[in-house]
Image 1 (cartoon, rainbow, N blue to C red):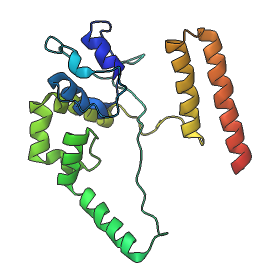
Image 2 (cartoon, one colour; image 1 turned 180 degrees about the vertical axis):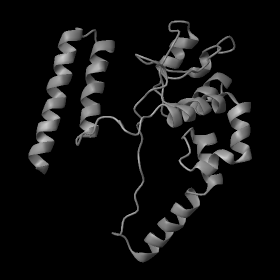
Image 3 (cartoon, rainbow, N blue to C red; image 1 turned 180 degrees about the horizontal axis):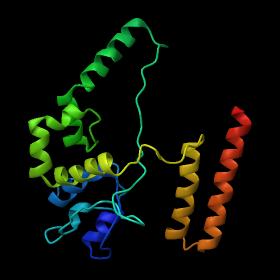
Image 4 (cartoon, rainbow, N blue to C red; image 1 turned 135 degrees about the vertical axis):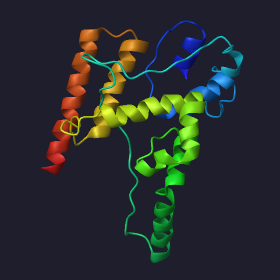
Length: 204
């Protein structure tokens, strides 16, 4: 939340954030953001957001905006549980894949719908034009449709989480600990290379 506070305090004019933060940013601006789990020294309610006008746009790009690699997660249903658990899981999967459930998931949780029919739900159409977070999510959804090249989905790597952890650690050192850029790049390169080597040793 620090980057929101920096914008509210006029210490920053721009931030790059995941689209899944849209409803949280809107709640922050309205003073309704839930603060459970935040560090004790961060109090969003103490920040005056009345003069803060945050807009959103497509992610910047080298050649043009809106071209990006998409990240996300997945849910899996396994066959390792008893029949009752599997039946319950299947009922949940069917419920969650309904268009109205996808619309709610988008409006409340800021996750983009993966069912095309969800976009036709009246309440989602209204949110995408009538609410701040909805308008931002409409931008993100358009990026999903227009900005991702199916012929180049992005890099494929086995140790995905470790790669992200190594890169995040290096970025944090650069930004928060005053690390020297060339040294930080070398650290990230060494860490990610080790992760790939260990993954290959374990799996091939």
